Length: 181
Image (tube, rainbow, N blue to C red; front, top):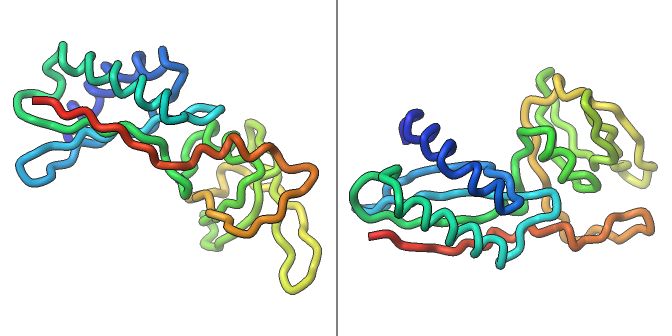
């Protein structure tokens, strides 16, 4: 997708997504055979359930129908959430990942797997799991030290009394499709 088309689609769709109480995280147009697929990824601090995804999908479809933003020809609109192993690129992503296990690639070349305890404007307070029976330790990590960060899926995490309610983990990649002619 050209930068111009990407910018144009973002300018067109972002206010509509925001009016639904969601953040527009990604837009991508891919060719699949003779068809094109417009993928829109949305999220919010409280997650996005299937009903919210369906509502925003209908609103985006209607807006795209009244404009020529996708040009002529058939395309499929897919609207979903970032998924379980989302990349963290914005401050709000780190806030949403509080209490989650994250794999950090550091600018200095190392790697760190730790749980986000707190997020402020300068960086993160982390809990680094103990190895071989050792206690977990805390560590401060500045945003400037992070090259990449990705949430990790945990299958066997034991709940603690300080854990947040897991209802905020809307990490399914629910997708609704609306085909345009």
